[in-house]
Length: 92
Image 1 (cartoon, rainbow, N blue to C red):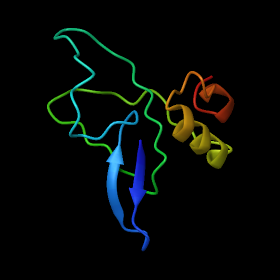
Image 2: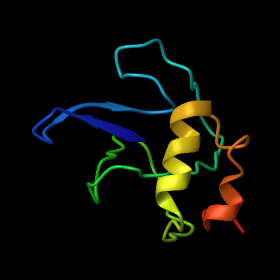
Image 3: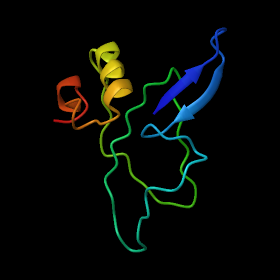
């Protein structure tokens, strides 16, 4: 998740996996299944994601280290795997 801001630091739009909310759906969970999501919050907000009509459990929460380096990689590559998110304290 990355939040773009105006020149006066007001939020203008939020991207999820490099996509705006107006773009086509990319995730299609199936009824009766479970998924593990890694939510990497690169915004200044402590609560930018709301999940409605779905049950979820937070399995773990970690502080991101070297956040500016991670942001730069994700903005360029838009791929957590290629950015090796494990070295930023996100995944053990």
